[in-house]
Image 1 (cartoon, rainbow, N blue to C red):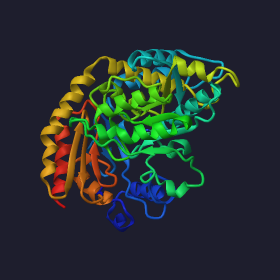
Image 2 (image 1 turned 30 degrees about the vertical axis):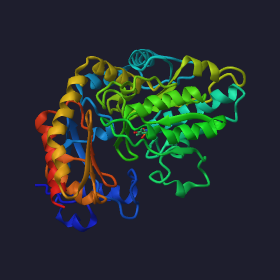
Image 3 (image 1 turned 180 degrees about the horizontal axis):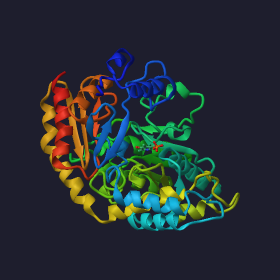
Length: 443
Ligand SMILES: *Cc1c(COP(=O)(O)O)cnc(C)c1O
């Protein structure tokens, strides 16, 4: 019989399954995990299998996944349609270089994607990850202005509390405090920061909210290449949900001051906020847009940077006449095949009612956390539920409690948040919200 405690060195003696212990011990000694310490890593749980919204952990716990593997697994794990797409493609070929070659999986994916995205986006650059798609977006903006003879327009504006990835250019536009700019000061490009949008979604828009951005543009437009932001929901930089009017005004400012608008829809894209893309809340189109995360339904890494015809033409006028980026695994056919299948699933249209019922249930059952003494605020939009605590969350303790209550939730900072697969059933979502309530109530 296997027993299972919290996975840290103090508790190893409680394991009776040697293999599990060896695996976890090896992992702890040799493998980096996201944002964790090599010296004193957070506990890690080994996944044995995953199906639908459930993860089976070594030791016997079965947990409902509240994270959709960081916004990605919107159709659930082991999805027959996505499995079929991957298996069919793997029997044809897994990868061929994209330089000088093309293939049906990429063509089908890009065709489908262009039919879904906001109007005006015409060109697709396939990138390896969200962060890389942001690098590509920033390069596009800078090269666009350079090719217009405007190399002076080389800085990027970003609202505070943003998150755009972990590579250097992406980091340079992340929130300077959350994004730990102090660690890398000498390496990071100095960008321009506006205060984070203040008016909450659903409240009355305050005109004051846009003034600092307007002032920044008015003072610096000669050096501003682009504004980058996450439309309506700021994700990893604080899980803040703001008024779409801010986005509408941001679009107008970009037009007025000759700057490109880059919308990072990597987290918000493909239905998560209740619209196919969060841009639609403001009825705007960006000049450049990044998508990733749910693009492959959580199967493998793939992202895309889309741009308008005007941006594409502008980039390729004059010298060097080409866009200077081309990853080895660009347009990976296996990833494209799965992404194409994932978009087809989205286009069946069930996401709309699924996200709507998730929102309704979160409103009923997560909102009651707001009455708890430990809780600062509850925020909900679409299939996103956020409980902001008054104090930073003890991640190891919280996760132990969540797992005992059948939930996989990964808090950060003061935030306990969920964005489950769209296919989640009411009782499974109840497991998640109950687990959060129980933990928040225990503090
Ligand atoms: C996750 C995320 C990224 C980075 O994507 P990776 O695939 O992790 O590199 C960028 N922007 C936003 C808004 C994200 O949520």
